[in-house]
Length: 118
Length: 115
Figure 1 (cartoon, rainbow over the protein chains, first blue to last red):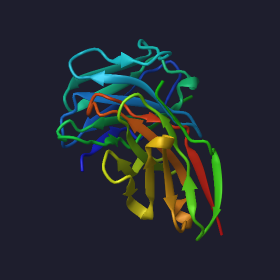
Figure 2: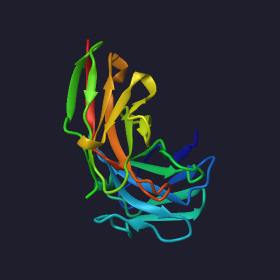
Figure 3: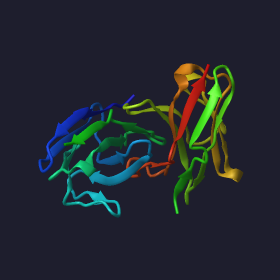
Figure 4: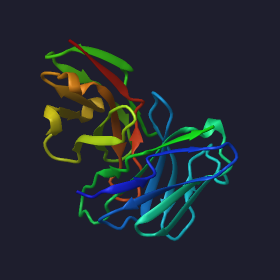
């Protein structure tokens, strides 16, 4: 099946710095990718929809200037957490659905990135 | 509004006993339904999915789920739970707009397995 790869799996950064997380679709081209955030013991909350070649669509309450999303190619979307603060510490997961499927398609998820801001 | 409700936050089941995790959804269009499992610190693994056809779907690891449109439910079941099944389980719903629609997740149910 289709594979989505996310990197890094874990990152620790200092408060005030920026961190970039990459999400790649390995064997399909994804015009749309999704970024989720998961707090401990909680569900996945959709942050934004990443659209290849255009601006991302952010969910209500998500700061677009803080969480920069770039989808420059059909296989790569990046999420940059700018000026990170400890409250940004979380588990970030990307997802994509394979548009090649004629009818039904599941969503494929990256392995997730554990961000810790110290 | 589109939403997924998992009424049970935490369930404990004895090893070898049967399991049912509840999921109710609210979705304006034809729903595509999923169950995912997540181990601590890990990503999501798809257990099973329902798109159309037979309302009883079989998944991996001996799991099955039944879609009941009249009840807007998609409950997950397993006849005999193993200790390795202890994890977080998420029900999710998506639309038929293939690649352009994100999944909406329930809050999850934590499954503990006692010996």
